[in-house]
Amino acid sequence: MAERDDIAALPNSDRLLEAALASFRRLGSQKARIEDIAATAGMARTALYRFYPSKRAILAALAARMLQVDEARLAELARDRDRSPAARLKSLLLAEAECLRLLLADRVLAEVVTAALQDSADVWEQHRRALRALYAGVIRDGQRAGRFRSGSSEALAQTVEDMSRPLHDPRILLEPGPRETALAGAAADWLEKRPR
Image 1 (tube, rainbow, N blue to C red):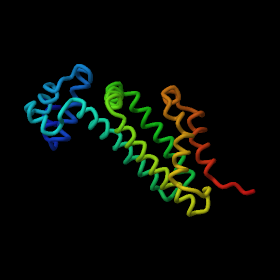
Image 2 (spheres, helix red, strand yellow):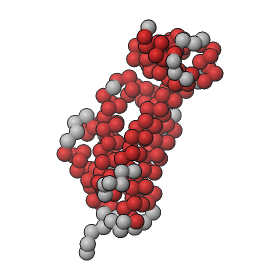
Image 3 (tube, rainbow, N blue to C red):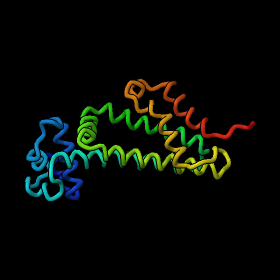
Image 4 (cartoon, rainbow, N blue to C red):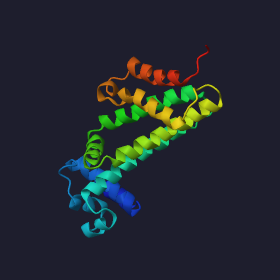
């Protein structure tokens, strides 16, 4: 019961998300019911509905929260002014791949995100927009320093995302190595100006 006591000490919306995650870990995301989540949170089922109208809404909120945690970690890398923009972009792309690898390695977290994405692609699209904004910020820094090619930082960020799409391939993510590093480096190298 220590887990339930720890969960009960959290604010209501966090408590419900932690209770949902605990229920999903115990029962699986498909078998866990609203009643199970409410019981784990130590609240009535009807009280849960004041925060989340359905299990789908809980899955979406839990997936969004997990992705926001990753975004915050990646934002720190993007702001690291002690490194060159190219080095920051490479580390950002590699760290993003590592976040996805960790998500895939945890069966329950992978189920939660998959279920949320099957219901609505909005959670993933918001995450991708946030990451493109991080890329664009690093690209602008590189442009101001005269190191990156000119052009719309948003368009260049989209190109970097397109170039790094293989880093989101589970076959590559589950076997990290030189291909991953080469893909991250290729995107940063493409942005850098080369002397003619």
